[in-house]
Amino acid sequence: MKNKIKMLIFQAVKKAHKNGELPSSDFPVSDFSGIELEEPKMSAHGDFSSNMAMVMASTQKMAPRKIAQAVIKNLENSEGIIDKIEIAGPGFINFFTGPGAWYPVLKDVHEAGDKYGAPDIGAGKKIQIEFVSANPTGPLHVGHGRGAAVGDSVANILSFCGYDVQREYYINDSGRQINTLGKSVFLRYQELSGKDIDFPEDHYKGDYIKEIAETILKQKNHEIINLDQDQAVEYCARFAAGKILNSIKQDLEDFGVRFDNWFSEQTLFDSGKVAEIINSFKNEGVIYEKDQALWFKTSDFGDEKDRVVVRSNSQTTYFASDIAYHRNKYERGMEKVIDVWGADHHGYIPRMTASILASGRSKDQFAVILVQLVNLLRGGAPVAMSSRAGEFITLKDVVDEVGADAARFIFLTRHYESKLDFDLELAKKKTNDNPVFYVQYVHARISSILAKGQEQGITDIKWKEDAVKLLKEPEDIALIKALARYPEAVEAAGRLMEPHRITYYLMELSSAFHAYYNKHKVLTENPDLTLGRLYLVLAVKKVIKNGLNLLGVSAPEKM
Image (cartoon, rainbow, N blue to C red; front, top):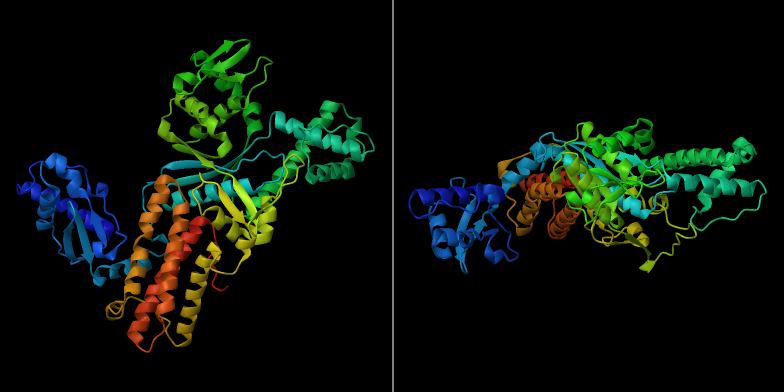
C-alpha cells in the first residue's frame, strides 16, 4: 500500500512539472522509493502523510502548500485506494484510505505463503556470516548465545531477502590460548595423579577442566605424565580442544544453530597461507620491519597506528592469521563478509578493515556486527557469576532451563548494540509478560480457532469477495494494516541487518490480534462474516509463523 501511494505521488509530481505547475525538474528523489511516507500516530492525520512538498520548496521556489495543491491536482487515483486527501499545516499531504484499499493485502499473504514479504534485494549475492567463533577453551556462555541468535537470524533474514548466505564458525585452535588450555588440563591431570601442583591465576579454571583431565587419566592412565612436558601439554591441548568443540557444536545444535562450515585457524598455518600473505604484503610494502618485528601499515588505511603481525620472537599475532583468514573468505567467492563480534572487540575493527582495503577490497564488502553484554537476572535480581573462579552460567544451562525458543526470542528483543537484561524467571512464564509466549500464543490460538471451524465443517478458507467485504470494523482494518507492514519490516531488517525489527513487528502484530480477539468473535452466526474473519486470522497465523522462522523460533499449534 505504502509503495502504491509513493508511486502515485511521484507520478503526480512528474505530471505537474510537465503541465508547468511545478517549474523545476530538480526533484529530491530519482524514483518513488525515496519518497518519505509516514504512518501518523493520530488517525485524524490520515493513514499516510508525506512532507515532500516542504522538501521540494527550495528547488521549486514555491510555498509548500502550493506544491501540495499541484501534487494533489495531478494525482491519479484510478484504483480508488485513496478516499480523501488533505493538506495540513505548512504543507503535509495526508492520505485517507477506505477499507477496500486494504483487502488485497490478505490475498497477497495467502498467495505468497511463506514467501510473503520477501524482497529480492540480495539478487543472489554471495555473503558469508561468521559468528560465535568462541575459542574451544571452555563452554559457551550466555553472551555467546546472544551472538549466536543474532548471527543466525541475520543469516535467515538475508537469505529470505535473496542473498546466497553461508554461515561459518572460525575455530581458534592455534596460539597461546590453546597452549594455556593444554597446560591447565595437564596440571589437573598431574593433580589427579597425586602430584602437588601450583595452579596459575591466568589458567583456565572450572569443573570442565577437571572433567577433561579425568577422562584423559581414564583413557591413558599415567602415560601422559611420563611424556616430555611440551608433548604432554600439546596432547592435552588437542584432546581438550576437540572435546570442548564437540560440546560447543552440540550446544549450538540444541539452540537451533547450524553452520555450513567450521574453519580451523590451524589450517592457515599448516597450508602456509599466513606466511604467504605476510610475504605478499612485504613485497607490496604494506608490511615493514621495525625493532626486529613485522608491522602492518594499517595507519595508511584509516587505523590510528600500525599493528604488529610478527613479534620480535618470530611468533605471529592473532592479527596475522585473521588477515589470512579474511583473504581466504574472498578467495572462496564471497562478495561480502560479515563478522559478528562481542562489543569488547570494537577497537579491532579499524585494523581488520585496513587489511581488507589493503587486499584491494572495498569498505562495503566488510561489515562487523557488535553484540553487547547480557545481564542475567532471576526474578529481577542479578545472577552471581565469577569468571575468576570459572563459575558462570553457560548457554546450555539457559536453554535447559527456559528452552531454545524463549532464549532466542528474548536475545533478539533489543538491538544488539544495547545491553540486554535476561530474566530467567520471566522467560519461563506462561503469561503475556513473556514476549515469546505473547507471540507464540497468537499462533496457537488461531490454530485452535481454525480447528473449531473445521469441526463446524469450514475446511476451505479462501478468498470470497462478499465475505472479505464484511471486514469493516476498525479492528479488522487495523489487523490488515499490521499485515501490510510486514514486507517493510523484513526489508529494513535485511538492509540494516537488525533482527530485532522482526521481533518488534511480531509483538505489534500480536498486540493487534489480541485487541481484535478480545472484541470480536471469529466464528459467528453469519457464514460470510465467519469466512472473512477466518481468512483474516489465517493470514495472521501465516505471517506470525514466517516471522518466527526468521528468528529461528518455533510456531506451536498448541500451548
